[in-house]
Image (tube, rainbow, N blue to C red):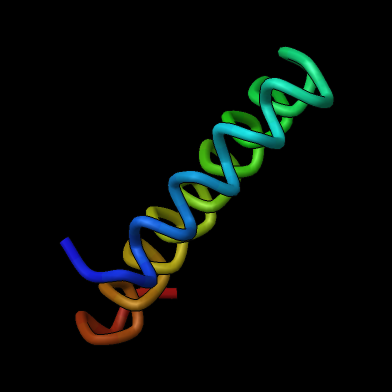
Length: 53
């Protein structure tokens, strides 16, 4: 585990402890939105390669 990763994990834990569970819910929503965006980009890129619109 790199020192930067340890720092990121500690910062995340402190943020959750200080700001409460609302931050954790916000992070989960952001992660979900990022995954959805990535999946839609993958599907869109696949359609362009196949010649479909």
